[in-house]
Amino acid sequence: MRIKLLIVLGAFLLISPSVNSQVLLSLIFGEKLNSDGIEFGLEGGYNFSDLGTLDADGTLSAFNLGFYFDIRLKDQWRLYTGTLVKMRMGDSDLSDADLAFLGVEKEDEEGTYQQQVGYFLVPALLNYRFDNRLYVEIGPQFGLRHQAKVVFEAEDGDRSTRVEIKNKDATNPIEVGASAGFGYRFREKNSMSIGVRYFYGFTNVYKGVNGSNNRSLFIKLNVPIGAGKKKEKEEEKSATDGS
Image (cartoon, rainbow, N blue to C red; front, side):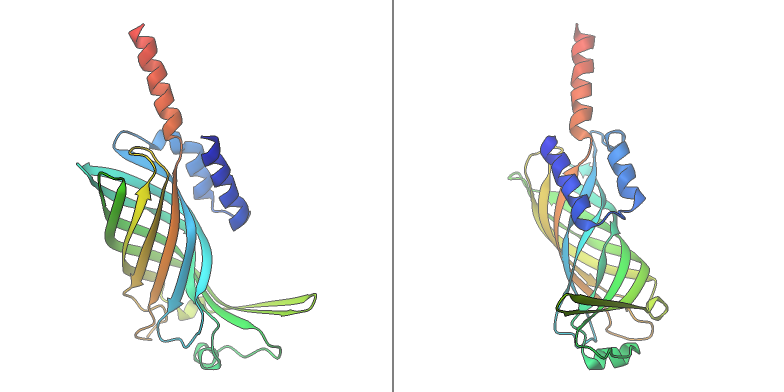
């Protein structure tokens, strides 16, 4: 349990002090949300994204954090859902043509430009667990855009520059796509797990611009919250009743 807490605290320190309140609530009430048929916890990781229609040479990489529900359906089948409350997709190393397309005036100094789009992302994945604790998953994924901006960054010796140009009004508020992935659970029940998931967006990021869809590769870590403590209480209660 101490190892899990250290991992969770490390995730908070790495991502930022402005972690969404939903994640804090999940830490507080995690024990109450776990049951025999439901595993609840935190999902965190790193994703690498790019955007269709842009000429950008790089990929946008970012930390993400949220909570998940792993719901048992039948036998080895599960429904995996939840919300990534802190995550972003987009593209990096935008070209001059990209800046012209986005209506962004180029800065005088040399630097890099990124298109960042923040979403609340909700998967609804059908998950199958194999006997060796490997799993595969596939299904739709939905997003609600809450911010969008072009970010310029430059370094010149001890001087750094960062400029943000908001372009939320140019983007669509709803994201719909499909995800597929695989992973490994360290134990059979109430276990930490690692995985990889690929997301392909079906909707246009930019209003009226066909082909401007999101694509992102997620590397993730799942940590159940409160499940072990709840099991200990149930065992103590059972021992007390038996005596």
